[in-house]
Image (cartoon, rainbow, N blue to C red; front, side, top):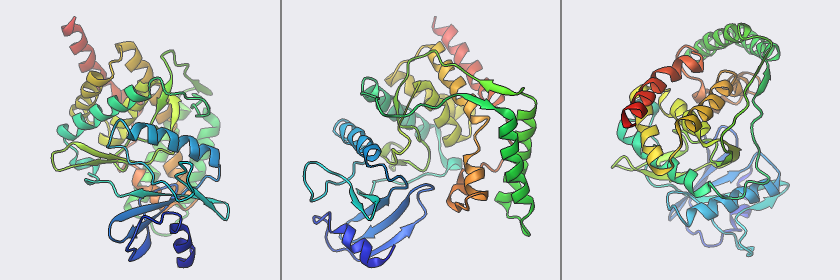
Length: 330
């Protein structure tokens, strides 16, 4: 994007002042993000989607939540009035967000205090979204042709092997893709799961690059609502444990226990949601395909540098302790 185009776009938010510089940042793996530095700091988001209705629905959810939970970072109103919080320029959609307070914490540095705070906040989000109208938001169909998925993995493997020099992340990507393919080859032609617990609106992308923490380890900011969707809430609880801590048992238990205090789920509801995430996680290819098929290098940070392990094996230690605690409480 040319500097003059950015300047033109920023004129839709006349209340910001003292702009000194605008430069792209590698925060987002999907949308383009620009840091706007001035008297205060802002982030201009250029959406990948050109579906204005989708962005409008997303902003309505964010605005609703931000009135209840100040940690939710809402886009700034434009000068166009009528409560609009995004603009369309040359077919592209843009929104301006104030900088979140706090900082992003790398996965390896997240403690049980962070986990408890993240779980508490996720529980509060789900509680606030429980009865929010979910019409127009997608769900994830949990059915796969495993042979097709193996073929997609073979393509990724071939692209990695064709590189003349492999970096550390490439070695891990190759290793994980090979292991994932071997796992899927042993699971039969088709895999599917039918959830039976209640669907509701969830954030959809609650992880260490979208959750900010203060010096007291409490959550101070939540960003990036592009993946708002309808799924069982336990799906996002299990997903958060996977992304935030790579399913480290101690931290995962802290998150889940703090979550349940804010938004109680039955054992069956939690397990059903975890099973939804698990069957999806075992077939999750987005980071691999984003990096090696589409050259989206920002997605490389989502390729774990550890062996691929089926969800059931990763979840079992956490579930065992949760079940033991549940029996003790009875």
